[in-house]
Amino acid sequence: METAALVVALVIALALFFDFTNGFHDTANAMATPIATGALKPKTAVALAAILNLVGAFLSTEVAKTISGGIIREDQISGAIFPSLIFAGLIGAITWNMLTWLLGLPSSSSHALFGGLIGATIVGLGVHGIDFGVVMSKVVLPALLAPLTAGLIAFAATKLAYAVTRRYDGKPDGRDGFRWGQIFTSSLVALAHGTNDAQKTMGIITLALIAVGWQNHPEPELWVILSAAAAIALGTYVGGWRIIRTLGKGLTDVKPTQGFAAESSTAATILASSHLGFALSTTQVASGSVIGSGLGRRGSEVRWRTVGRIFVGWLLTLPAAGLVGALAALLVVWSRNAGLGVTGVIIDAVVAVFAIVFMFLRSARNQVHAGNAMSEVAASGHAVNIDDNPPPTPRQQRKLEEQERRKAAAKAAAAKKADAKKAAKKGNVK
Amino acid sequence: MTIDWLAFLQVFLAALVGAVVVVGFYALGLRLLATSGNIPVVAPAQFTDAITVVSPKRIAKAEKAAAKAAAKNPLSEGQKRLALIAAYACFVICALAVVAGILLIVLG
Image (cartoon, rainbow over the protein chains, first blue to last red):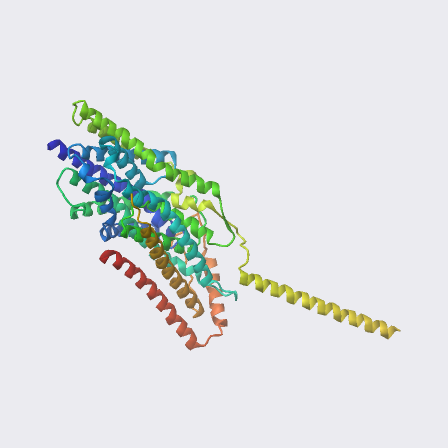
């Protein structure tokens, strides 16, 4: 029993740490655009994001229930080994996150978490431990469909925003006002982030509690919600400073109108998905929105190569983290079968500590250059190429044609007049 | 393995309606604000070198252009006031839509 308690304590600590890094890493998603377009002061933006992440974590627990009561078949869980497997899964997730972060690959901490958990469970309990129906419908399909959904909505919203504010009389169009709007939409994104990402940690901790029999319902306890919310808020606040320092080194050209539309779509998509318990990667949804809204501007075209690179990084995360999680779980299972008890867990813990220390040392070195300074979401803006001189809208086109016609008519009339004059002169001479 | 495809459609429609209502009404509000002669000129709070920096000179220029355009505005005072009220109404609708969406999530 004591070892079980120890392992659960380790799982909780590691899960909260994972939550912290998630907030640490993802602040840029919510707050990069308003800081870049100058809507908010960096300090204000980061504080706001932290508070809203905290609030968001309390709004809905559907995503937590997906993890604690859906993906893993609880009836198949044998209480003794499962907490160690969750631990192995978490180590898989954190290690993969660290690797992608060091290599500068696009990744998703949420998918790393699921990958690690699934990989560890398959190794420890076998394939029957996973409910693949739930994995498909609540994790894999939302991962593919949500960025597409957000992109389509952002495209429509951007077109709408530009069409409504476009003026043909040359007077100021008031699009500057979208800067104010961005304060609200980016706050909504931070809130949505809390409803989806903080839930994943709650789900993991609840799953561990269920496995050792300390809890028998998938609803997370209040202290779990509180600690997960606090961890993500703290991570957001701390991570924000690093992002602010790196921000401004190379952001894509996001106009306030476009940013407003993109953020509205991101927030709407994540909030709607959270409500139905879809565990999404918020980074991917935000990237989808940025690409979609870029395409909503006139004279834009997709750089398919960049899109492809982002997409491959996304696809890789789940199986790769699964593999690392499976390896960590293998160690746990092996040491257990060899009669060494929790030695495997301890080895895993040591590896995890090394990985974390390495990550911190690396981040403390402050290697900030154009290559790594951009948040992933901002980087995805590069997937769309926007013409500086966009082609005219149909109405502008008609106006131009009308002007051309008038000019031609005036020219023809002038020519005719001149001809008539010449003819008259000739007549006079005769 | 049963997959609830309807849920994806639900998410798409809910998010689409939410985003279109918020963006549409906000844009309409800005448009009406501009029509009423109160053209918003928002200076960036703090500049980063990543974006086009708006200098105080350019802000002053934009404000001057806005004032000039407002002076040229052929709308009567009453029409302007109506546009202003309509603009604020649009912003209120926006805020209400967001609050309603969040309430749906919390209560639903």
